Each structure stands twice: as C-alpha cells, then as structure tokens.
Length: 290
Image 1 (tube, rainbow, N blue to C red):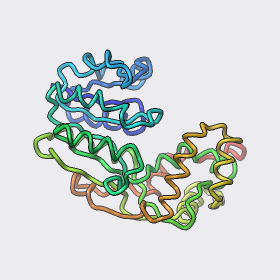
Image 2: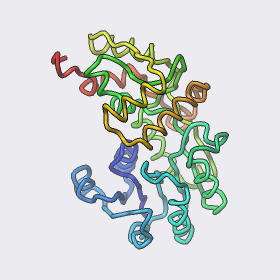
Image 3: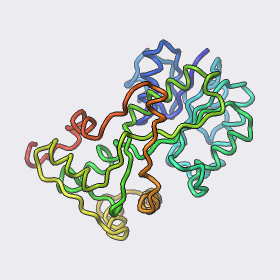
Image 4: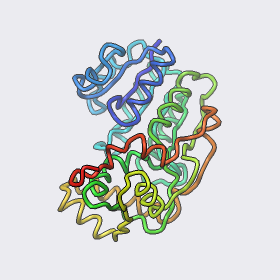
C-alpha cells in the first residue's frame, strides 16, 4: 500500500515525501499543480490532483492508500473545509492520518487546527498529530526579505522566545510516524528545536553567519501590519493571522522545548545556527553581494 502526502510541494510536504522515499515507501504526492510536483520529484512518486473543495478528486487520491500526511492549505481558513476529505479517509479505512497541526493547539481553540484535530479524533480514524513550533523557514522565507534588504529581523514578537524547528526535521519525524502506523496510532507529538531563542539572539546568530550586522527591529503590531500589507503587498487576511500568532507568542506560547523529536528519531534537532549556515543564500545581501 501507499502513503498519500498532501501539500507535497510545500515546505514540510517536500521533506516528508523525500524521507518516505528514502525509507522505501511508495508515495503518492498530492497537490493542485501536478507540473510543480513533476519538477520536484520526477518519476520517483505518483502524482495526483487533490482539491479539498472538490470531492470528485478524493477517490483517485486515496486509491490504494493506507496512510495519509494531512496539511491544511493556508487559503482554507475554515476547518469545515477539510471535513469531507476526513470523512473520505474514514470510508477508505486509513491506518494512520498524520495531521500537521500547531504547538499548543490542544489548549487553544482559536486556530482552525484545533477543530480539525477534534474532528479527526471524533471520526475514530487512527491519528498521529504533529504539533510543531515555529518553522525556521519563516526566517529564510517570508521574513528573509528584510534581512537581505534592510539587515533587520522585522517581526512583532517583543522580547518573547521561540523554540524554532527546521521543517526538514518535521519531515523526518512525520515519515517515521507514517512508516509505523500501528506503533503510533492515537498519539500526538509536539516537535520543537533544542532551545528557545528570542529575536535578538536570532539577529546575533545571523550577524555571525553572514558577516553583516543584523538587528532585531522589534516593530509594533501596527507598524508590522502596515508594512506587510502596504509595502510588501501581502494579503490582509494572511497578515492578520501572523499578527495573531505573534500576539500569542508574546504570551509565551512558543517557548516550550520538548524532547519529542529526539524520542522519535534518536537525533538532536538542528540548531538555528546550523540551519542559517545551510541556507545562507536566503540571507545574503543582494546590494552588497554578501
């Protein structure tokens, strides 16, 4: 039987797919753009179109599949958008669904992930929830623009600390769960890095790695929101969600450090300095050629 990886072209989905392939699993990579999956994986995986808003795509995606890595697409804000697909998994007698959730979501009813977890549990599908901390890729991705162009980390996190984890580590942990469905049925795993850092420390590490002076701008919520909507041109709804997440971060929700990753993998999670060195091109200054 096969493993279906939803969101296979995304940050975590790519790593889950690659780890499963290395373990010898047969993988079905799902997304809305098959051509993108072709570029990423070539002939190593089967590719299917899966649109959670179109039940007509479910049957092909779930054919001969007995395990599923489930990601909520960012543009689907309502948890109910995923319920029909969860029902379809139940009908196909899936052995394990590993849902990419959020750290602390079991106590936080606001994010849609909370209701999705509860719906999976109520359906009596065997599950292994993954609850990661903030991705290191947030800094090499959405926030890298300011690091490159302004030598500044521009997030409204105040003095709070975050136990960042590399999405590649999440991919490994997810693959281990999916590889052994009977072992991990009805479990939840909070995955973090090995230390909690504030953004002053993040800036210091980036200064060390890049050789440039990187500072933590520590913007207000208003200044951050206005900049990302007006200057960066990002969707208002998306920016509002990030503001809410940083509000929660200031309350201390992102600072816990767990050993769940070590227990699953037998390895230490990647440090932020190791991550920054590996992805240094993301932080290089275009104007200075560094």
